[in-house]
Image 1 (cartoon, rainbow, N blue to C red):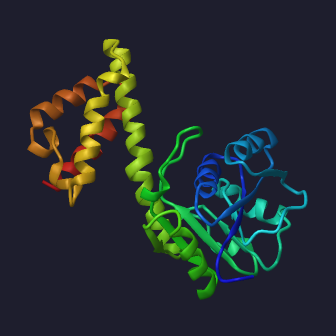
Image 2: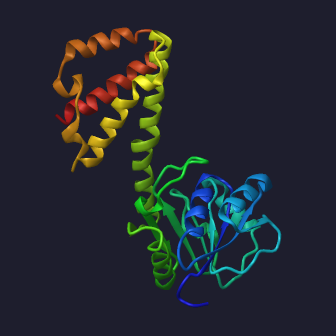
Image 3: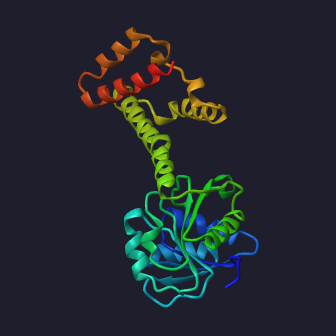
Length: 259
């Protein structure tokens, strides 16, 4: 095996696998050999999109320099055990909260793209940070060089650092989207207004936060102003929804103390 990664196979058929397959298939100097997956229908679909072969998990696979296990966090260890891969190849997973050690012995690592992925939605990987961990320095360097063919935003991150990054992502992405859902459902239920009413506000808020050195500097709203009358009125409006009152109160307190 050379120090460079020229051939890759992806194990998985989810959203991360799809995005990585399409990005790697379009990268210069890299051959995407196969999609390997338990879900045959979905795996074949991704393979067609990426113009590569498909192999069902458990069947013999083609030789590749790198195998990327792109499955859910809880499935990484199980899939790693089921896949019979060449001993001289590098094997990595893409999970933010799973240790490298679950992959066993050999050249192992983590290839963690820090982004949210949705089936059918194209993501420009050149804008996505990728966090790398290798079982040894040579493997780490190989993974870094490979990642740099997809994005210039490549960082090293061991398991402890990656867990912190993953937690930050939950706050910045998953929780924020849950708040969008709360807002959209309340507007629909209380005022029969569609989600599109909120979209300009969401986009402007996200753009300001992304452009700011610190999102706290562009915070607005009644808690930022210390307007207790408005906040009390809002809490009264949520009387029948205790859990929303708790969310409103906790978030308002967080905003107020950072004024």
